[in-house]
Image (cartoon, rainbow, N blue to C red; front, side, top):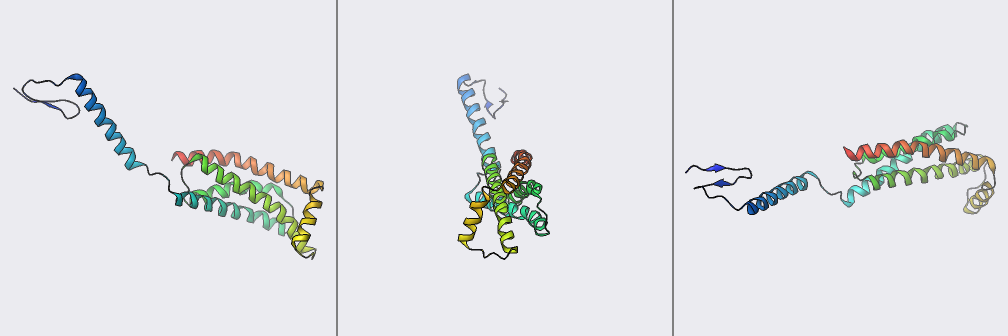
Length: 183
């Protein structure tokens, strides 16, 4: 009798057919094993180092993003609208440092570092103004000035504008994180 080759690599000889149940289980198990091997080789779990480099990249990117804002401030203009650049720069730093393609952590790193550095820049403006006015920059003077600024409408308005612009920019950046993670 001739040999027959069936799907799954089973060769039938001498007209003996295997039990259907055994054939289905063997075929299913080999298919699952092949799929697991494919995914195991194709996708590596992000390591702790990639999370660290992603966080470092998001922070460095956000720090680079406040540089144009600081330059404009140094030239004498208060232009809080530049806060939207911080989120974009943070994302590019995250991608450049090859942060993990994990949506949750990518969004957390980029959002948190962007907001922290936007707040840092707003309080840095006050510190730069203190330096220009030749007020000694001590911890005591900083606490006194910041306590006074909490009641100042101009400072709160600039802080609000920069946070709103930063969050508006971050809305688009968080969509970019989704695209980055799907690649």
